[in-house]
Every structure is written in C-alpha cells, then in structure tokens.
Image 1 (cartoon, one colour):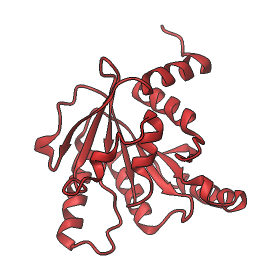
Image 2 (cartoon, helix red, strand yellow):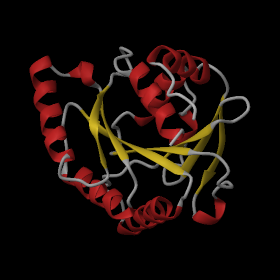
Image 3 (cartoon, one colour):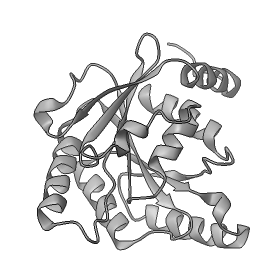
Image 4 (spheres, helix red, strand yellow):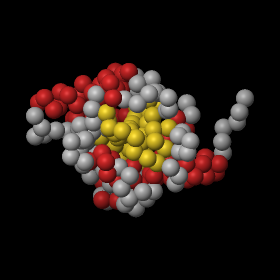
Length: 215
C-alpha cells in the first residue's frame, strides 16, 4: 500500500505540474462534443465576472491560458484544458451563470448542458464553485449548490478576489460560506480563500486539486 505524499512533496509536484504543459483542448456546446472521458476532470463554476479565467490563469502561471473561454460565441460552452505532459487531468471552464439580462432560452440551454454534464460525467472528480468575496453567496449560488448536491458531485467553495475587501469583511463572508457549506451534502468543508492578483491561496488550491484527481 503506497504512502500519502508529504506536504512538501505535494507542493513540489503541484508546482512542477502546473508550470508545465497546459493547453486548450476544445469547446463543447453539447454533450455530443465532449472529449473522451479518459482523464480526471476538475470543473470551474461560478457567476459571471466571478474571476474564473483569472483564477485558472493564476493556477497555471499563465497570463491568458483561459482567454479562449471568453471568446465571443464560446461563452455558453464547456471549455476543456489539458494539464501535464503526458496529460494528467483536464480543467473544465464552465460558462458563467447569473444571466440577469440573458434570454430565457440561453438560460435554459445553459442549465440543461451543465446539469447533464454534472450528472453524467464519470471522470469529474471535483467542481470548484467560485464565490466573489465582495458579494458572498447569492441565491443563484445556492441554486447551483443544490444542483451539485442532487448530482452527488463533490465541490470545493473558493472565495475569489479576497484582496478587494477588508479583513473584517472577508472574515464575515468566509464564516457565512462555511455555515452554508455545512447544510449541503456534497460541499467540501474546507473553504479556499484566494486572490489571483496577489497569489493568495493559489499554492494550497493547486495541492487540493492534485489530491482530488488522485481520489
């Protein structure tokens, strides 16, 4: 039986892996366009403008690896990125939710695609649900948490843009998210506090992703 890697070994492996090959693979507007399920996947989910692209760029040490996901025409698709040489796993950048002004058909199509992916993707190891530290949990976030609970998809709650609020406000938001997480069966108890701009929490989240894909 193999031993668990030490924290030091895990940190070194995370730095090596994320500083290596990370390449955009494809955009999938429907389930029929998904790549073969031959590698573990970690999905990023969050409200529009929550900072998904910035976080992916920070995790991978790039400036624009996630630019493809915000290209016009691709905003309602699942965007896949391969990590590692050879490939170890894939990031999945999911379209932002919270369409205050979007046509109902767009919202319905997004929900159908995301729900089907979450429920049917066997290789999906973890979803990272991003929450803007400036705003905390919104009703639309709670709706997604319930969707993840129903799909039995384990997820980590990740606070973004934590450098944009005071320490007191951040502590209040974190406490509220922790309390809400305890009400959800699929939520991971540890809350990740990050800042893509300042690099806060990036190393810890990298290591968490490595632990998740090994499950």
